[in-house]
Image 1 (cartoon, helix red, strand yellow):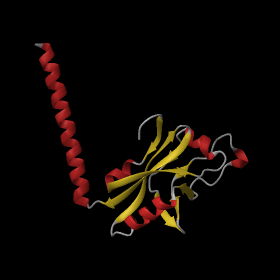
Image 2 (tube, rainbow, N blue to C red):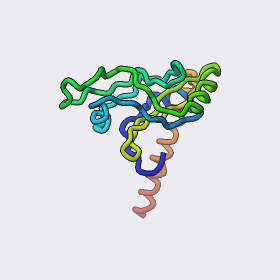
Image 3 (cartoon, rainbow, N blue to C red):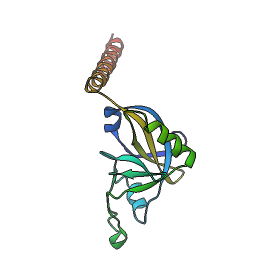
Image 4 (cartoon, helix red, strand yellow):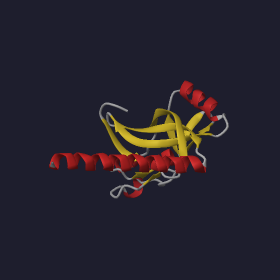
Length: 158
C-alpha cells in the first residue's frame, strides 16, 4: 500500500493467528450510509473471513456500525458484503485456498483515492507454538529497542 492511503481498521488478530502468504487489494460493495460509517472508522474485522461463493468473493462477519444520522437507510451491521475483484484474481484465489490449511482473511480496511478498499490475505493457520514464537520475537525486539534507547541516553549524559 502506497500513495494517498488512509487506514481505517486493521485486523491485528489475523497476523497473530495466521502466516500471511500473499495479499490482494479488493473493492467492497457498500450500501447507503455504510460508506459514511466506514469513513468514520466504525468498522471491525475481528472474527471476519472471506469466502468464495458462486465465483464471487464475499466478506462475512465484518461489523460496520450503523451511521448515527442514517435512520431508515441503515442496514444490518454484520451482513455479508460482496468484494469486487477480477474473475482471474478470484480464480487464482480459489486455487490457492484449495490447498490444505489456507484461508482468505481480511487484513485491513482503508481509503485509496476516496474509495473503500480491503486488503485480503491468503493465509496459512499458525500452530500454537508458532504463536508463542511470534510473541517471544516481538518481546525480544522490544527489549533490544529499550536497551538501545537507554544506551543512547547514557551516552548523551557523559
